[in-house]
Length: 283
Length: 315
Image (cartoon, rainbow over all chains, first blue to last red; front, top):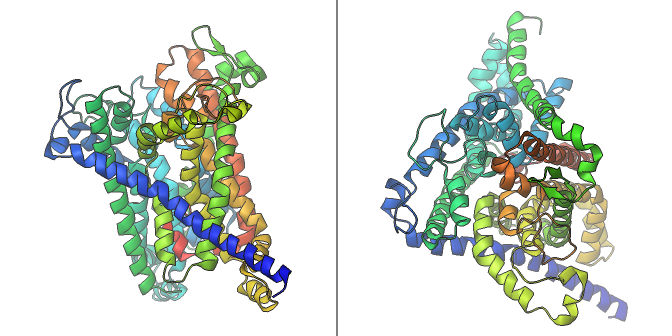
């Protein structure tokens, strides 16, 4: 083996080693974050965390019942805003895929997807907080909804385009209108995938904090009023993490554990569903 | 297409598409409208001056722009080689059986909420960074990059956390782009006796436009990242080259000060920061999408490859 071949092989070996090391390097922070969230969070996670209100400073225990309910309400509101707009605009993009307006909608969806969540928060503050002069759960839900729309729309579009054209043609040949063919044949056959997209969108926004900071704000009390500020897990974790109190830090870790569990469960479910889907609908 | 029910369907669904377009337009218009006070008062000086003193009514946003760009560039310097390494490993080197697991694990990095990264950052990363900064040799401390006392919170912690958060995005797009390189290209290289480095290097070169797009997409993500950065960067609006110095970004300024803005001018100045952040990410993301598209158009993958694995694996 000549010297130059040896050098080439050595360089190549180094490169392969670097690539493998990159994967390991990326796994380190993941493992560390998960390790600390689980080990720190589990210590203060108990039934009271889910059923009790936050304890005052200096009093150990307490929970985040209001924040958990608040988060559920906010995510629910977001889904309520986003699912119709997301699915129907997705239908438009796939049914009229070649048109200029569909491209514009697609561009808008991708753009919206890249807008920083804090900017969405500022925007919603301008349209839904300032005019009414107070923070509200509705504004928070709207901010989360705006973030969900592009995810749902693009997933719906992608999955509808995967439905074989023969199914649509079959429905049309039987005399169905275009709308009927789409809503009774095409959409249902892609439904599982669309639901998966919704679950993923929920997984993504359930952990959002920035768009809630000045829309739904926070609330120290138990509130389900949509026109009032409402507490959320993420904002509460943020407030506790920035506080100087040990008890609150522990609560923050517990909150983080709940968040990570929710988000990872959703992602995992979506992943399994996707795998199944690919089995049914291979390309 | 001439039947009225088809028209109704087209208009009906099209209206919802229009909602999407309107939201994006409304974000721009609304942010511009709300920041008019600050734009009129300060003009371009807003972006040229460094004094941020809400009490005195002085608003110069240069430190925030600096903090955003500096932290994002540092994060990219760390994240880009690692992301490309991961992309190459998954798409070119790893055994097929391992691929789905590796893809899933890197996607998990994107799934963890920003606030959780921030919490971890405050209590685990920052103390570790502080210890590292304290242990820095004196010779290094003479450099402008390492001057100042070791706080732990500051540019270095922010850049590290940002890098971790950007990696899944860049690597997933880079992987997609590599997928678009014809197999025959590598086979040709191997047939000519190329080593893996040479064959993959050729593939990377072929995919260079898309790779640049992937890196830019990561840049766009880093610019707007808020919570984790806010929690570890130290929130000090002062321009410094030092990695040890607490600084501020545009996003962290918004997160920290928005609810404290007690005058109309203060609020307007903050919203102007939001407006510019919006425009910056808009330009970067559009450019990156253009580059990725030109490379991998047949794959119709969304810029959200990471957050939409369903769509991505369908691609």
